Amino acid sequence: MPKDLTSLEGKLIVVTGAGVGIGRSVALEAARRGADVALHYSSSDRGAKDAAEQIVAMGRRVTTVQGDLSRVDECRRVLDESAEFLGGLDALVSNAGISPNDDFQDVTEEQKNVYHDGPIVPHGRVDYLLANYPNMYADLSLARGLSYYTGAIIEVVSTEYEIGSVCGGGRYDDLTGIFGLKDISGVGVSFGADRIYDAMLELRLFPDNLLKSTQVMFANFGAEEGKYCLSLLDEVRKAEIHAEIYPDPAKIKKQMSYANNKRVQFVALVGEEEIKNQVITLRSMETGKQETLTLKELIAKLKVR
Image 1 (tube, helix red, strand yellow):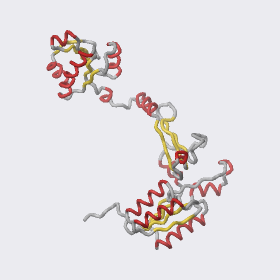
Image 2: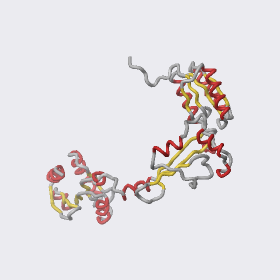
Image 3: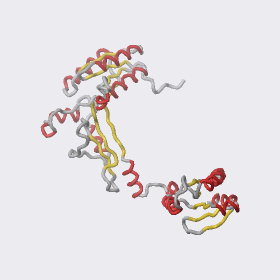
């Protein structure tokens, strides 16, 4: 049988910040996949102990270890105690974050080294990101949501079109607490759909066939005409022609403007005379020319385009 690549059976794993949020979820999932786990927490042990009880119920070995990861000696102690209980270590999931309580300008070089290259965090993670992703840079003047962001903040801008940020977010601790869900932290971003659309439109990033998806639009002259056109629309769509009908009997100028802005190729005009004679007046939106066709002729004309 092929090896199960998702199994962690027998692995010995330490998860930092395992009392809440992502760290807790990672620890529980690791246990479900067969790992024995050491759960680190910084202050309150409530979340870590609850997670430990669930892991014990899965039949896996587990321990909880408290520690202040801003101190080198504490980092070593957390790892040593975890390894002693588990009988070794196979992996470390570095989920916990540390940050200074001091104002930025008051942080010492020693503190910067701990927060930036902390002994339990992969060395030089910020330098690595900046070196390997040339479009990413740190701007210490940025400010967002001062009432709830508690760590790094993120803004995304277009390098080809000046429109401000098109995406923004950052780190927040216990923001969900105001809604009754305590001790949950995370990183969130939101996208500015309008700005992204405007930038893509200006930079011509939409495929031409996307904006020309409708080949023919049936104009709507009223209830009776609309009802009649629905049966024609059904036949046209069965022929695999992209077609639509204007949703309400608005002024014809408005309907034509809609078709023009959407780059519809043809507009089908069906009024009382067309219904009486079983024909369709087809108007080219590119040339403005009109011709009278039967439904069969209309389908044949549009199928070859």
